[in-house]
Image (tube, rainbow, N blue to C red; front, top):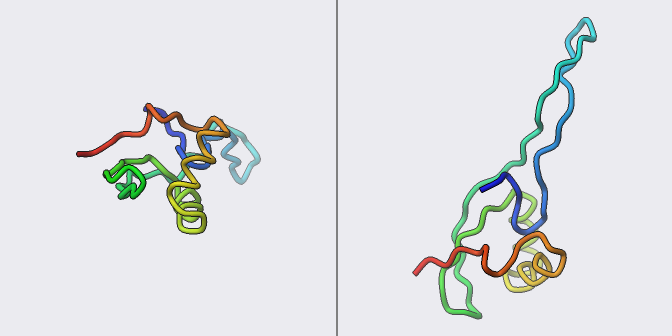
Length: 86
């Protein structure tokens, strides 16, 4: 699975390491991703999401159902990509 947040759609960016002598080498800026389990009350089940720290803040502000509906509407994830646990 790629390094993309399922709630906010954030993904890794590329940039440069710049040394003191201003030499530039390519590098990647990865997203602060982690796997977290949530209890999805509307479906009465546990789901596992790969989210960033910013995605966790969005879920805390909007609620899990609204955040998932918003992410599916924007195309960041699909309902079949959400892993249901038990």
